[in-house]
Image (cartoon, rainbow, N blue to C red; front, side):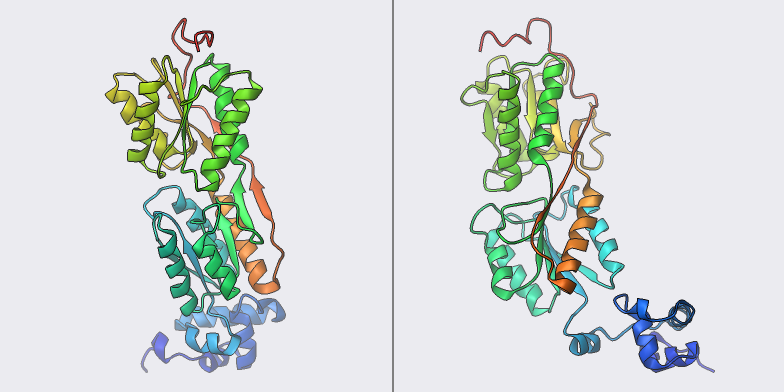
Length: 351
């Protein structure tokens, strides 16, 4: 007797093994309809399918249901460690509903992102998770809306009529500013994120609002927006701030990669962290606790962000759930990159 291969195993064979009708087996193997099958029967079907190596015919299922059980995700840099836990949590939540995740990386090119939307739509994805959206006139978002393709924004806001799962960026930056001020810093500059992105805008606003609430001045030129969320861009922005901000004692960065660039700029300027200057980041991406000194940063709940975004998208796919924003609370993680300013350098009177 030959052992059946997954390609030779069909739904009727699974049903026969489990002692149920093929329609019952079909419902038991579909996460969306499994609740309609008695638990003992569903268990027998799933056991038989696993033992026989059965895999549903995705193309046939798509033709029958009008859905591919595929979800796309666009991220601006797949190598960015921030997105790994977000995507992993999203993929796990989607898998619970029988969906698989396809990830595309258009970088920082909005037009390329729109092309990816078209390509994924041609593959009949059921919806999209977008981490690439800029604040205004975003082509990828426009492409989704034009096709009526369900979409959810991740770590971005600004898409009118499209739900988003974001961290409270203003509150996060305020946590960093208040932490530095509590240490005695008064001359704090901001390495900002890209202006076209909601994270760049809101974290800058959070910095300026927190400084104003503490009665600390932000002189002209003490905020520098990086052109992208990258280490090289962070070094360039931080170098400009160090050159033109006399007596700066702390750099509050809008992103951990920017903070790593600020480390490079400080070392090149001969400034030890935190003895001569403090640096804070934003995101708490993996491994920033392993650098020297470990980075003080604002932690975003990445896994929860991915999980909530996936479930929100599934709600839109299945039920057409209304748009809205899920705002997650950040926390501050204090590590070795922040400390008190050197004696006599905390006074803002000379600004």
